[in-house]
Image (cartoon, rainbow, N blue to C red; front, side, top):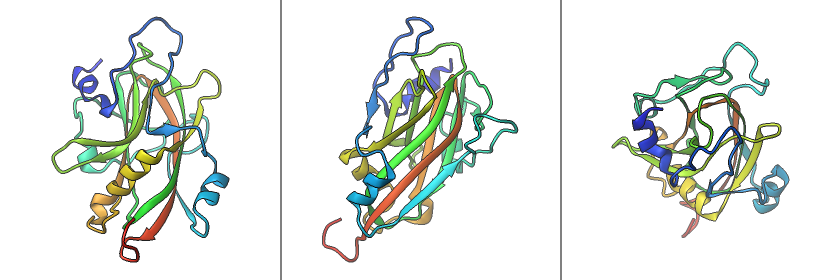
Length: 214
């Protein structure tokens, strides 16, 4: 394992200790399975369309590997950990991808979906997080989890809780003080599993110039 990678811990709490080959319980950070459907998002945010941002193809890890597009700040985060693409089996590597939201509004609702499979040497100490690497090189976490794999299909879907939505709003420019470069959402995951694809659906709120409070 990369010591620096483990120290970064992508803003999650201490990860569970290894107890054997059985996948351990997840620890969720600002994620919930409540309202994790498009219908729920539409109901919570009437008259607001959703925007879908995607990384990788939903192809069950098929070759060739799907590319990742991390911005320079994310590429430099925990630089000792090599970047992995979508699909290939990996061990002791990091998933990095960036999504340009270009938002100047609040976030009304958001859902993430991804497919993962454990492939490495030590289960139970891995993490998966979305957030934003700031100008100082610090990963500002919005939401994430430990042990990001499922014992069944590998497909997992969560919605962001209220605290996570507030954090995502700030990271994507809720006060209209963000440039497009600052409105990028970063995905960072490590280090002993492969990722087939990642989706995030976002329902934005009103433009903050149109309301006294977002």
